[in-house]
Image (cartoon, rainbow, N blue to C red; front, side, top):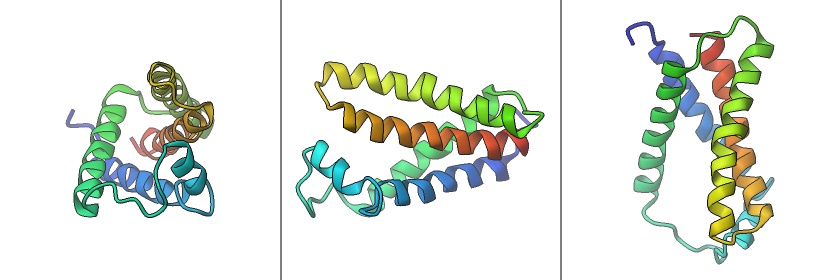
Amino acid sequence: MLQLNLIAIVIAAVSSFMLGGLWYSPALFGKTWNREAGMAEGCKQGHPAKVFGVSFIFALVAAFVYAWLIPAAGSVAVAAGQGLAVGAGFVAASFGINYQFANRSTTLLLIDGGYHTVQFLVYGLIIGLWH
């Protein structure tokens, strides 16, 4: 555990916020996500400090565990492949199971699963190459 690059882990966690801000913005998937999730326009989801604070803690946990479990990558292709495998194969696929039982739309799954697939692709590039 002493060999983990804590700076890379923090930067990876911050990157998920940057990606999420764009991904869930009205410019990309925000309007569709709100519609598919049944969220009314302007509907509050809780206190923003709590939502962002807890979300950042989860992003840190995910980045830390990724760095702990996934070996350092020797190339960009390997780093990207590792991130894609985790994002699509573990996270998005797990969302898919839950979304089927919750009767959520495929569109919502593609938005949320796509976000986490790209999130872990970026984690793979940051952590895998800067291990």
